[in-house]
Image: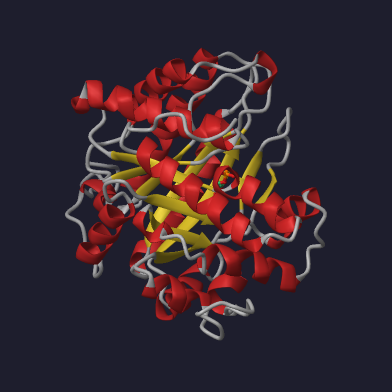
Length: 368
Ligand code: 13P
């Protein structure tokens, strides 16, 4: 009894859950994202992020160029839908753009309709980017975007989206990621995930551990374990249904100033970090490519799946890709040279090899 004579409070998260309206649909979507041999195309670069990619190949960051680039990805003749379960889009792609390429058989149709017709699930990035966390040194960040999120999510569902993504980032150094950054970001990720589920959209929670820096693979593993442990506590606190959730994970690697780990080391370290922290109820884990080349990202994913196959009890989740740069980088260069067909072939090839890697069956075909 407290001094007021009331019973001690029962923590909310151990009380029986209120029913979640979309629970069955969320679970189905989370499973579909990680269906055997399939993964995601991350084409959700914000207008600021795609500027870097476009300018990197000599293209201006105009709305027309952003539309044309995504137009050629989505309307490719090659059957990327055999390898890709969903596409993460940015708002203007989902809500506004349609196909305008000259010889596109989809001309005039909205991108969201094209994806749906091809059996690919549309999703959308809903965070509003990172800001500096005050008084952190070295500087760390938190991610913005919770205000008005439910209303936005309801509009995206109405338009046809079935999942969302929210990205937080962690730097690794002797003193980071700090408890301050991990707690702040995990809290925001969990609140975002609860809101997304409320609107019927599977949340893809992305606590990205950045690879820039001077640290070994053991230190990266510690950072991943610290970030994931707090994330899953916060997800429980906010009553997020883990069966209707996808984790977007970074691969456990050494910092870029320490060279490159082998695919075998990355596979083992990544499975170790996940097996310590991610509940088996989560259906699907997808990996970002994080700035590694296409061939490296695909080899690492293959190795992760080989470790899983050697001992499936350690890794009960589907482990697949949600690559941005690894699927688009080489293709974007071909487009900048004026060859749309070649660009389309190059991206669909990378989707095919990533699909093989998600089954541990990749044979090294991607040129390095
Ligand atoms: P990369 O694969 O280029 O890292 O992008 C994936 C992504 O969506 C990061 O949020």
